[in-house]
Picture 1: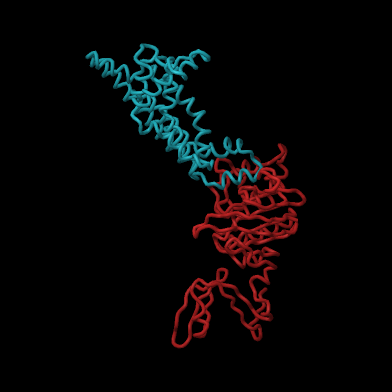
Picture 2: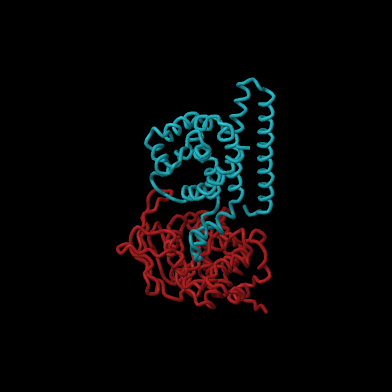
Amino acid sequence: MLSFRLSFLTTVILFVAGVPLAYWLAYARFRAKPIIESLVSLPLVLPPSVLGFYLLLAFSPSNAFGAFLDTYLNLRLIFSFEGLVVASVIYSLPFMVHPIQAGFRNLPASLKEASYTLGISPFRTLMKVLLPNIKPALLSGIVLTFAHTVGEFGVVLMIGGNIPGVTRVASIAIYDEVESMQYAMANSYALLLVGISFLILLLLYWINRRLLRNMSYV
Amino acid sequence: MFEVEVKKKLHAAQGEMLLDIKLSIRKGSFVSIYGKSGAGKTTLLKMLAGLVAPDEGIIRALGTTWFDQAQRINVAPQQRQIGFVFQDYALFPNMTIQENLEFVSPEKNSRNRIKEILDVISLTELASRYPATLSGGQQQRVALARALVRQPGLLLLDEPLSALDHEMRLRLQEEIVKIHRLFDLTTVLISHDPSEIYRLSDYVVEIEEGHIAKQGIPDEIFHQNEITGKIQIIGEVLQMEQSDMVFVARVIAGNKIYKVALTRQQASEIAVGDKILLASKAFNPVVVKLT
């Protein structure tokens, strides 16, 4: 169940951070934008082990950044659950940001402009006009992030290791059981993971279809 | 008085273009902006609304400054007291008609004003419906109503009727004139349709590639005013054909198509798609009284 706690936390954090980031990327115009967009997408193409390796180095107390966290925030991010959350947030970032950014882009620009000329502040426009009209995109972002975090392996292994109850998520546990020839255990973990992931995706497409039916204007 | 003196570099399809406009709009007037697409009409309107910032220049409205590059003033669209109606209506799809109007209302207790506006534009029966369930004409009427909730001093209309059929256009044109008078507005309309401009506006500004090509009352702009005492129709040539010795052009004006005989000389100067003025001496016309 550690997998799901991790995924839930990651999804919540990414939703809160991803909406403003996606909004900014969808509407702001500045020269360095391709750089930011590349950074957001980087976890998509990098092998998880590469990302995990660098995060491990960065968070290690023997390096400057890790030492800073350790000394001033009393936060050790390697081989700890907090570290897993931070790593997952970075690793799943594109899965939250991309659908929401696309959602914003697909809205007609006149919706936002109309709201502004009608005296509605940018924040209220975002909350009451833009977000309610990209619900399917928000839902995709949430579910993809959740599912992707449940399924991650490389980053988690690099950063968290394999500590029962702290960092041993389902994917690691499966690997562990296979390593020690416990195929039956591995199989039950794996089946559970397949089943739950399938259910989540099924739920997504089902809700999405209902949303789309109610919002014939999209 | 609204005074606009702005410059902005635009990246149009044909390359860079300098939008350079100097224009005064009298309070209470109905001004139409006419010109080809890509001439900079919408950009000008968005500058008035504060949605697009000019590169340099000033915009003053009724004594207050909305934009002044030299003094770094750029009043946000929210503070300009304007109504903007878009070609695609831009109604908030997640709200009913009533909610669309309430959402943008500045005061909490605005039911009376909203009710009055819905009455004037005869939308009361649709108030609880969602925008997606309305026809194009109804949606545009809602957009007009919504733009009026905040009691704007300036109403900006960006080709509001171009997506509607002819009959609906005529009805909404009347609606717009009524609103313009009733709510004491200054209105700026972008339109491609000379007959619409004729019917609605008291001043026309023609923009060509970012510059004002002509401005004046509609008669001066669309008619060479030496022609008088004639019946005049402005239309667009749909088709040209030659039958025996004469050339026949089919010309559409409003929702009517006219067949017109042309001489060889005339036919060589006119092509399909041209806007032309048909004038006939009102010397011996058939006149039938309709009751």
